[in-house]
Length: 267
Image 1: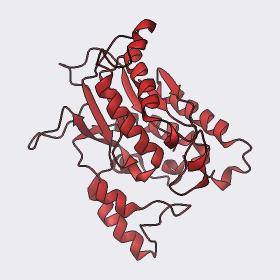
Image 2: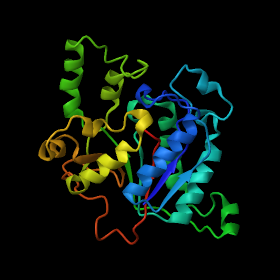
Image 3: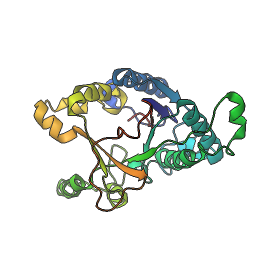
Image 4: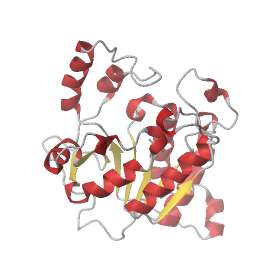
């Protein structure tokens, strides 16, 4: 499995419980590499752009901000990685970027285009001189939130006096918009057997409160019920009406190599 990260998350706000942070980008890269080691990823690919922050923030105007990167430039980098790694399955953000983060949306658009163009021999022909041959993965998935639990969550937040349209530490996340944009779950993967590893990887991200999953000290069976499943939307091949929910990302008849290709940022 390979992980692509466009930025190091340097525009975020660190969890105040970890104390002063001299270089947030370096810290978050260390946290990301910690999580990658725990998850046993084959490689981590950093594209070298700067975190753009949320809409309207000064970070979005930085010349190295990811959202300012030309689409063709980003697509070219992703196409080269797809041709090098030759994955069967690609995972990326949904069109809304999970919770509306501009970098997530930019990566979604770039990855969808790269997915199609990586198999086109006429796209980026200069890459063939580097030994990178065309390759088109078999499947494309978007990470999605299950819609059903979001309904009572929004109602509960309102009862507590929170505005779901201005959520988060900086009040810049619109949960209602995320709910409206949410795609249906087509693929539900049971990860309860490796839940401990997921929690350990999440805990690496100290600057973003990554240890929250274990902070509740819940019994394992309840933790498995709450976050023991990963959910996705299958974009390619298109999920058909009436098709049963998938339980695997790599059907035996399609998978020919272990490569899985996923883009993320530190959380």
